[in-house]
Length: 129
Image 1 (spheres, rainbow, N blue to C red):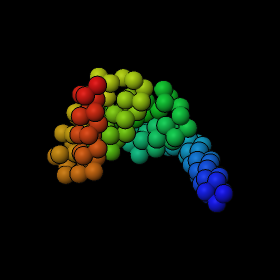
Image 2 (tube, helix red, strand yellow):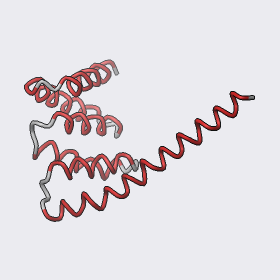
Image 3 (tube, helix red, strand yellow):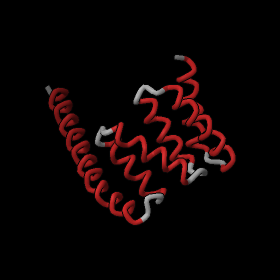
C-alpha cells in the first residue's frame, strides 16, 4: 500500500504547488496592471501580465497582452514563443504559425537557441496537423 500513499502524497504536492503558482499569478496581476497604467507599452509588464493570465487559465484575456509584448519588443523571442503557444491553445493555428515563423526569425538573428528550438518544434507539430 506504500504505492497508494505515495500517489496521494504526490497528488497533494502537485495540488499545493498549483495553488502556490495561482496565488503568485494573482499577486502579479495587480503589480503588472499598475506598471501598465504608468506605461502601457512596458514589454516586461505586458508579458508578465499575459503569462499570469495564462497561469490562471484566462487565455482570451492574455492574448492581447502577449500580442502587444511582441509588437513593442520586436526582438524578444520569448514573447513570440509565449504568444504562439497561447494562440495554439486557443485553437488559432494559422495565427500561431505566423507568430512562430516570425519568432524563429527573431531567435535566429539573436542566437536564442531555446526559444528557437521550441518554436521550430511547434511549427513542425502544427504542420503535421
